[in-house]
Structures are given as C-alpha cells and as structure tokens.
Length: 197
Ligand code: GRF
Image (cartoon, rainbow, N blue to C red; front, side, top):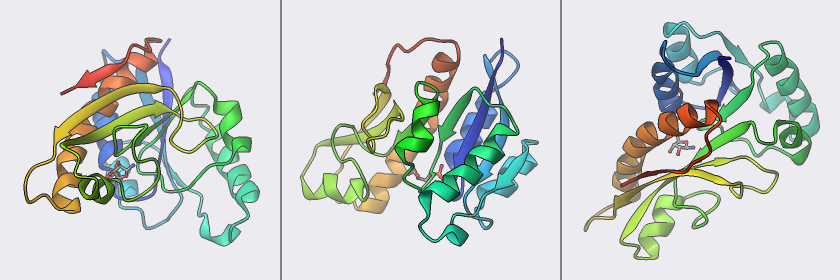
C-alpha cells in the first residue's frame, strides 16, 4: 500500500524538494501535502511547481499558544490523511500533545551527529569543539527535542578554515542524500539504519 507523506517546512524547503523528487513510481510513498507555518516560506512555491498540494498554518497569530497552533496544524494535516509526517526545516518545537498521536510515524532531519548537539547552532558548536567530523541525522520524532530513535546518519569531514556556513553547506548536501534514503526504507517498513560516509 502506498504511504501518504506530508512534509512540514518553515523556509526554502531544499530537503522537501529532494524528498518529493525521490518519490517516483517505484517508491513505496508519495507526497500528499507540503505545509508551512509561514506564508512567506520559499518552499511553498517549489512544492506547487512540483505539483504537490500546499497549505499554510501561520504560527505567529497564535502568539505562543502552542496548543491552539497545534490544533489548527493537526486539523489541516488531517484533511490530507497522511500516514507519515516529515519535518524538513520546520522550525517550531512541537509539544507532546501533537507528537504522541504521530509516534512512530513522524521523522525529522537534524544537522548534527545526534546525540551530539541537540538544538540550534550545531555547526558553530562542532567548530568550537574542534570536531574532526560532523554531519546530519534523521530520527523519529518523540516529545523530547532531537531525542528519538535514529534512522540514519551521514558524516562529513570538518576542514581547515571551515566556517559555520561552509560546514552547513557540506552537511546540507548530505541531508539531501540521507533523508530520501531513510524515507524510502521507512515507508517500506524497514527501520534499518542508513549510514552514509
Ligand atoms: C537544514 O539545515 C536542516 O538541517 C534544518 O533546516 C535547514 C534548512 O532546511 N532542519 P531546508 O533547506 O528548508 O530543507
């Protein structure tokens, strides 16, 4: 049975584009929605150009009322009846109330080799620590931030002279390889870890 995938974004959606492009005819899943929490998210036009239905649930009007925002978010998502949620550059922290019903069905990509560097500014923190390698992780989303079961990782070298931006660009290239590879396995019911060098 083809799995229905909704992708949540907040910005340019480069990971979303790679996920959508990866779901071809031979893939166990297909995209049914790209949803942004900002009307100015660049990824909305990119999704529409790829023929994927889009929606916006602005988080700003809820002024920090997380439950109200998440209720509106869930209502919009439910209209498209996805089986899997992929967070892809989605910059809102979701409460347990939203996450629990999606347990085992929601993925996120994080720009570090978890469990190192949960949270923000991961590239700067890896540089400050003098790490020789860095990378990205796809994991199942649980109520604890960036804590869920790891489904895949990709590693990159940290090079002399790297800045947070140069390192982020190198990691992003691997994100674009890792997330589609993990989604393909996950949608087929395979939780074997993807490891990319
Ligand atoms: C990426 O660095 C990703 O690791 C993080 O959001 C950033 C932007 O992603 N989750 P995208 O280009 O919007 O997919």
